[in-house]
Amino acid sequence: MIEPLPPAARLFVSFPGLLRQHGIAVAPEQTVSFLSAIELLGPRSLEHVRKAAGATLAPHPEQRERFEALFDAHFLGAIAEPGDEDFAPDDDVSVQEDSGSREVLLGEEINETGQAATGAEALSVRMLKPLDENETLRRFGRELPAALPPRRGYRQRAARRGATVDLARSLRDAIRHDGEVMSLRKLRRVTRARPILLLIDVSGSMKQRSDANIALAHTVVQSVPHAEVFTFGTRLTRLTKALRRKRREQALADAAGLVADWDGGTRIGDALLAFLAVPRFAAYARGSVVVVLSDGLERGDPAALVTAVARLSQRAHRIDWLTPLAADPAYKPETEALRMIAPQLASLGNGASTARICRHILSLGGSQAA
Image 1: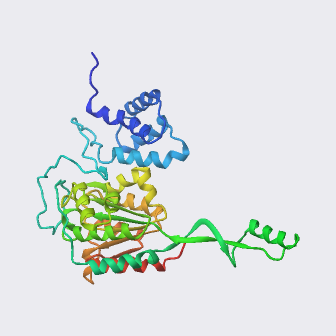
Image 2: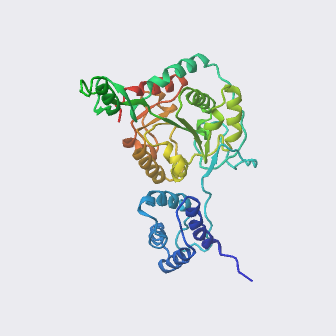
Image 3: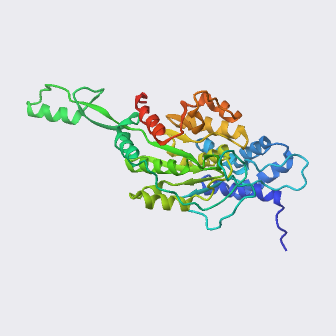
């Protein structure tokens, strides 16, 4: 009879399987070597586990970044202190892609007032209410495509001036003039609007703004071709597909059914690391304008948020953090995590109203094209 694996070993055994699911080849012999290295090292810290994984699972250099992201997502918050006899991994941040959870749980600490942040997970169902901001959103939707910062695309088109010669058109003109080159036709790269990525905090401390922020996200998705929307609290949920429905009421109803962690705890860093751990999600941030709608009242490990924002800033064109707390002219970041990530942000602005958020996003068109 085969004895079941102890709880501590299951966490390590499942990691090679996670790598295979994301396209990193791992042979059974490498899994055995990984477990042997873990036993040899102790381990006494997460870095010991990281070194053992890197040495035995041997990811390709081009897959190193994906390997590190998957490692952080798998082991983040799941390492016991040395000497703990009862090893049990903590709850990871769940990732939901346009699919809700059938099981609805309520945490012990539910934030009824929305005036404070909590780290407890509270899963619930919520109905989003239509808001009386139609004219503001309608005007915002009309102006948004032209207001996003431009970027140079890879396609080229005919132009009077340009850095590239249109050889085909130039040769056709030469044929019409008996082989004599009268002029060289030019090409220039087409400019297009940058993608936009909205990351919306739906925790208890943001419950006064959640409905309005999702309605704003619907307008963004309807107005520009390249937009992505995710919500986070204690979980990460992709809402883009639901918000592509043209009718706002239907889109908001679908979105409300997808998010399971309304008005719960706040683990921003863990949620962003989970976002970056999925390669397809992380690709949405590349070259994008990232707008985070959150009060920044992080109750998780500040180091996780610092790491996540640093990685996100390497991919994104810019990160703008809009918080309702900034409605106060004397506002300064209160949490250690928000103070630490401030240098990585393009701006820390006022997100207290839909009009303020719209005005800020429309002002981003002054950014230089990359």
